[in-house]
Amino acid sequence: MEDPSAETPQGTPAEGGPAITGRSPGRAAWERLRRDKTSMVALIISVVFILVAIFAPLIAHAGGWGPITPDNKAIDPDTGNYPYGSLGGISMRHLLGVEPGTGYDLFARIVYGLRTSLLVGFASAVLSMVVGTVVGLAAGYFGGWIDNLLSRIMDLMLAFPQLLFIIALTPVLQNALQTNIHGGTNENLRLLILVLCISAFAWAYTARLVRGQVLSLRGREFVDAARIMGAGWPHILFRQLLPNLWAPILISFALAVPQNITTEAALSYLGVGVVPPNPDWGSMLTDASQFFLQDPAYLFIPGVLLLVLVLSLNLLGDGVRDALDPRANRS
Image (cartoon, rainbow, N blue to C red):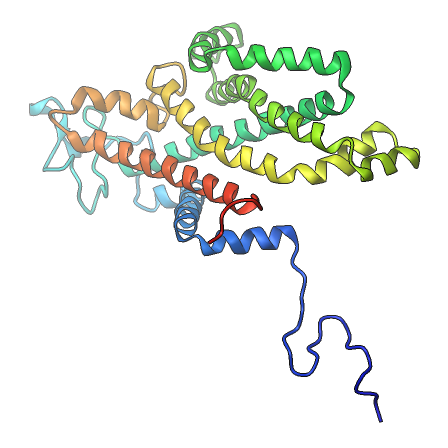
């Protein structure tokens, strides 16, 4: 007969009580995020946008139109090639209407333009996160002249008016690099230049954040124990310190993506980003501003979608920050 006073195995209920289970920091953060209704709505909207961008060819071509496939029957040459009908030519044939002058299907261009915006936004955020993390780790851990040098570089990059310098730098790089047979810069090359230019000014924010966290961690017991056991600096940086920095790095990444998307749209709006007829929301807004009085839907539709995308990503970033901050008020 078993002794009723014997120790109950871990994770099993004693005397009918509830089982005690541990939660990892990631799972605890997810549960806090899941309880935030605003963040969950933002997450759902963001996922929908991302899926639409991933499957852009299938979604756009399902309607029979590509992003640069004109429909001359949808525009009226007698009125200056404005779309037939009201609301910019919205119909079952063109779900969001057509562009004035060109006859391009607006739905197809918005879907492909979303892919461009998310590609530049996420790629530049990843690149700036990697560079900023490495620089911040080095500055915070080594200290001394290395910290002074890297900190001054961070201060210099943060002092630059980012958008102004990107506007000035992007055309110079595009003109300096190889052009295609038509005399214009290859579109993939233009996107790469946009990613590099945005990342070149964005990494300093992550580096400053990581440096501050490393300064508070490098004197902890687990770092001293690793040194005593003979661990080298690569092991301490990437196996001891970096795993304790994933929360601030993830927060920085989540907040950087919508900012980079806005920067990319602004650059395209000013004519130094994606160049028409290649689809992009910023360049679409530039063209739409010329037809606002005659076709307000052309400006309204991509403008509202850009607002919804950036707002949802910002709200999601705020939710991630609150979920990963153990000091936040959870009442």
